[in-house]
Image (cartoon, rainbow, N blue to C red; front, top):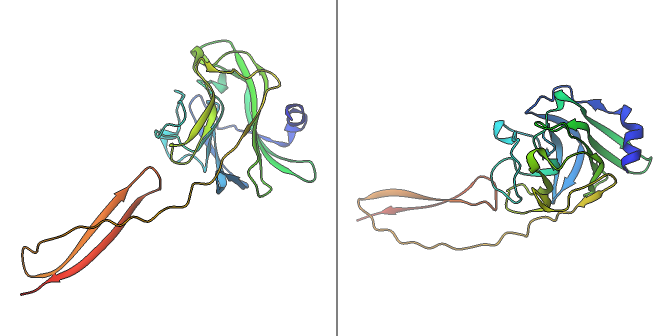
Length: 233
């Protein structure tokens, strides 16, 4: 897989907007991840992807996380999240590839320099877009163990409440040249209904409306329900 990508990488585009601390959003073919479909991908200078694209500065982090972590960025694919400095050495590229039957988005960090050391690391993310989840990490030469020994290899869901680490700092296995990892994910379980009861005492005559708001890390936004009535004589 790794050799195939390097042989064909001339079809890809160098991410010219990659700076020392950046995430560059790309519109890509629709692909599946953890039960959802996405057409946007944020490519981070520090060795991770934001599935669905970055939406602000909080999605740009050189400090790696131990998954899961509700702190942004979330919905992360992290083949080698550490503090990189691409302008100081190496290149970051994105391409679409096909063998005539299957299709992939490939993001390639090629000999990218770690920020405070001379070490460079080479790795890719392969994302299939044939209607089913097909995501893997492939590694070329890994010259260091993460800048200062800090690195995350893993993946996390949209809410930052589910995830897994293959390597976190000094825990787990450090990928090496030829390592290939597959990312698996499943959709969330169907929601359940809950009934919340309450009683109210009218303080004055007239119509009233009460609103109940519910927030949770299990869903996006705020759930709002209302109840109305009238206090009469």
